[in-house]
Each structure stands twice: as structure tokens, then as C-alpha cells.
Image 1: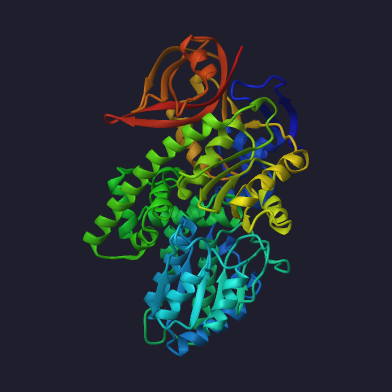
Image 2 (image 1 turned 30 degrees about the horizontal axis):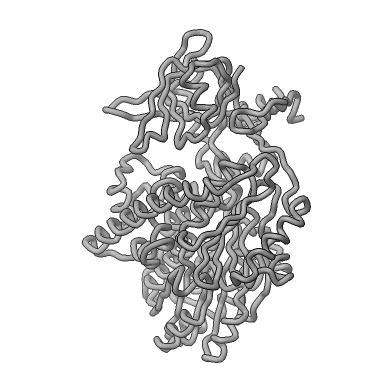
Length: 585
């Protein structure tokens, strides 16, 4: 019923993409219009992405009451709740170990704030990326041992840390793991909550750790209520933690579908009430004066929190989310912004160096680069940018003496976590893991070339060619792209991973004005005009494709794909088109 017309452009675009446009059936569009009282434009976009009625409910009107899953669906949830309640009843000091990325900082903040509210004494440790490394380490266990912590909850790490879980047992430290990473070499903690466990039947494996911790807090709070824990104290409003959940979910790049979509949508509502002092101060310093959207978290707030774990003090992001003293929060926000600015500078320098090393791109199946001066904290960002530019899986590494630390980013339909697992099993890597699209790994320098040779030998197995494609949501004219239409698109928010902002196709346009802008003159501002004489302001960021630059500057006629939004400047609002790709006609 869905696809009455589908075209796949045979010729690639200037960004080396195929364009795909599937027009939904008139019947389905009419059904959505009548059921949800939506405009033709919105109904068409929804219909093109349509899966089933449950999907529609999550997109348009999800509620915590109707759509939030029962935490008990997760394997071991009941067991973990009983263990934690027993520790609380004995006034046990609880250690919390969180990863140094945004998911780790937010999940740690969620649990810390809840424990603090109900009177549990907590000791937090956020590891340093370079000194301590990812996950449970000897350093982290020694830290908790020095603090006389005998019970530890690890967040966004721990699933595969069997060696250090055993080390903790030798120190008489019990460990509970709450994590969402792929299971490779499962340790033996006291218990573990991870929807990717082979016998977990919750179907919640798209949740990041922030979402899992939120469900854990719900289940714990529910059981404490049953046991009359709040008889003589005020029960916390757990919904107030949703702003932090939203930040973690957006920044961990999990699919923004179903439960994740619900958590982000409701979390943004809480965030815009300005209840979290740290986030409020950070957004103010970033000049985010309007209601915060998912894109603001992805492009501005998240990178600041993440920068601390990449190149600075890894605890800064966590502290921003939980501290209460305004002067301290002002300093924390400034440090995070400064760290992010430093990260941007390092990223530009490193990316330019890395790009110069990429050769023989015509038949390239993967990128494999290493250097002894690249900062380990930005390797993942560089890999992501190279994937975006060259559209092949990318391995980027730093060599420190005889140790190699690397990050890898992948493309659609190439599950990098499975490749890393095979590399570990065959002994090329000491450790490695992650998700389908991203991962990290470690190896000895002496294994570096055999690692490369193995990838090269198996490139046609590991990196099967897939067509790079852009799925178009809507074909429109410049006349259609008015303020009313842009406002109506807000009904489809939040946008994110697996649920991107609508891609709009405009045919037969040309640029009548173009100007390089930005500090490094790496953005291009222009005015597009169609065959009817209608005009719209447009911009393309970080333009590195010279073919696109010349097409715009030389005023050639082309079809263009991009996104639309309202640009506010000098108290005026006007539609602005964000160019992503184009084809010369």
C-alpha cells in the first residue's frame, strides 16, 4: 500500500550519492490526515516513513503513561532492585563508576541525583580517558578500595570487563553492571542489566545507558514506595530527571524511535522548564535563548559536555549536571566551553593532516590511518568526518610508545562491532567493542601491520559495497517553503538518529549570489532562485567539495536536497535552506 511510485536516480550526485524518493499512496496520506488532523505536507512525510500504527503514536503523541515500557521487562531488573534495596536498608555507601562520554556522564548524574534525594551516600568516579582508559580498570577499582567502597554500580561500561571484575572481587568489592554495549566477553558481576544479553527478551536494546538508568530508577522507586520508604519523607518526582535522560539519549546516537523518542520528547519539555541549573547556565553561555531542540543538544550542549571526557577533566560534565552552587556552575560551564573550543582546534588540525594521508580513493574499501601525535580523545570525531567525506569505514589510531589506541566509524550495513569481535578473537586486537556504527579498540604496535593486512585481505567480505543513498521525504518548490510550513514541521520533532530532519528536494534552481563566510571561510552562503523567480536564502556548512562550490558560484542550474528552518536575525525571521547535496542538470 505504501509505494505507488519510487524512483532511484541513476546518476550519482556531486556528493557521490544516489537519490531515492518513494511516494506514499494517496490512500495512506488521506488516512493520516483524517486520523490526526494534519496538513498534506506533514502527512506525506509521515506516510513515506510509515511503519505501523504504533510507530505513528510514538511520532505524534507519545505519553509516559501509555508508552513507557515496564522496567521489569529487562532481565535481572528485579534481582538488581532487591540487591540495591538491601544495601540501602543497611546504609551502605554505594560507589558509582560512569564512562567519560555523554551517556556515561548523564547516566551517572541521573543515578547520583536520585540517590542524593533519597538520602543514599554515594561516591562517584569518572575515569580519565588516557590515564584510566575505558570501562572498569585497575585504577578505578583501586580508587573505590581506597574509599572503603564495597558495593559498586558501573554505568555505560562493565559488560565485557571480566578481568577487572575479578580484580574487584579480590578486593571484596561487589559489582552491579548497567550497560548497553554489545556482549563480547561477559564477566561475572553480582548482576547485570543489559538489553543485549543473549537471553534478554525486553526488546529494549535501542536504549542507551541513560535510558536504562531511568528505567532502573523507576523500578527502584516503585519498590521503595511499596516498602513504605517514603512514609516519612517526600517521594521524588522522577520526571524531573528526564532532561538529563534526553541529553544522554541524543548524544549517544541511539535510534530516535519508540522508547527513545518518548524519552527525548518528554525530556525536552522538562529541559525547557529550566529546572537543571547547570544546563540552564551552559545554554545561556552558548546563547541558546529559544526553546531547546534536539539539534541544539546534538550540536552545542552535547559537544561541550563530551569535550571534558575527550581532552579535559572527565568529571566536568557530570558535575555540571549535579552541582547546585551558581558560582561553581559558572566556572564549570566556562571550562566545558573552553575545552570544546580547544577540541575544535585540535579536530581541524588533525582532520586536515588525516585527509592528506588518504590516497587511492577510487576503489577504496576502508581507511586505515595512524600517527603518534594525534590526540586519542578526538580520534572518533576524525573518523566520523572521514566517513562523511569518503563514505567508507574508517580506522584512526594513536601510537603511544608500543601501545595503539584506535577508534572506528562505519557506514550503513557494515556492522563494525562484529568485525572488531572477529579481530579480537583472532588475536589482532587486545580489546575492542562498540556498536554497529562505531567502536574503539587497542592493540600492540607490533600487531599494527598484520591488523591492516588482515583487513585488506578480507575487505570484500567485511566491507561489502553498499550504495550511498539519500532518502528524500518531500519534493517542494521554493514557494512552498514558507514560515507556516516550517512551523508545521515542528510537529514531527524531535529529530535525531534514524529519524532525521525531513530531506526536501527542490528542482531546477540556480544561485544568483554566493559568498564564503565563517572564521575560516569554509561555509558558503547563497541565494537560490527557481524557474518561477522565487528566491530563498541558503547555506552549506563545511564545504570541502569543490564541484559543489563551483556549481553554486558559477550559477549553474541544479536540483538540490536539504533541510529547511527559520533563521532569526535582527529580530526578523526568514526561511533558510541548508544544502546537503546537489545534481547539475
